[in-house]
Structures are given as structure tokens and as C-alpha cells.
Image (cartoon, rainbow, N blue to C red; front, side, top):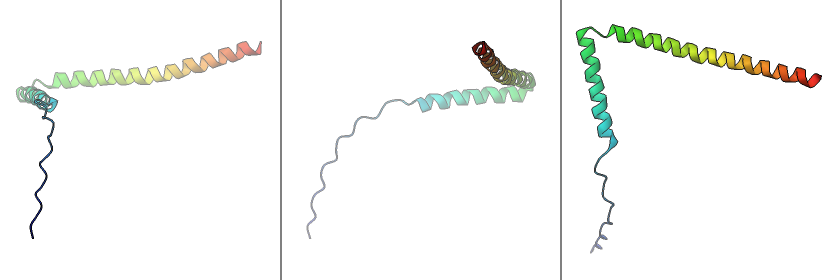
Length: 86
């Protein structure tokens, strides 16, 4: 039984020459090397303490900003409602 010949393959577009994944992998490797070097020399704890302090400040900023915004907006509605009553 004779088989029919396959059609020729369609032309595929050329692949891009570079990818950002390569750059991200190089950057991640660089940061890992810096992190490991800080861990090996034992000079990493000041950075940890600094990051913890910054995280605490950021948390306070977000929580108090959210709370004061609600207080400010609730005071604004009571002030407008008292003006409407007059």
C-alpha cells in the first residue's frame, strides 16, 4: 500500500535572539553571591536589624495611615451632616 508524501513543513518565524530570563538568572546569581559572602564573613546581622526596623516602620505607616484616613473621613461626614441640619 503506497503512502502519500507528507506536505512540506510550514515556515516558522525566527526565534528571538535573547531572553530576559538570562538577565534575571545572572542578576539572581549575583545577589545570591553577595548574600552568601555577607553570611560567610559574619557581617550580615546589621542588615537584618536594619531591614526589620524598616519593615516595622512601613507597617506602622500603613496601619496608622489607614486608621487615620478612616477617622478623617468619618469626621468629614459628621461635619457635612451637621451643616445640612442647619
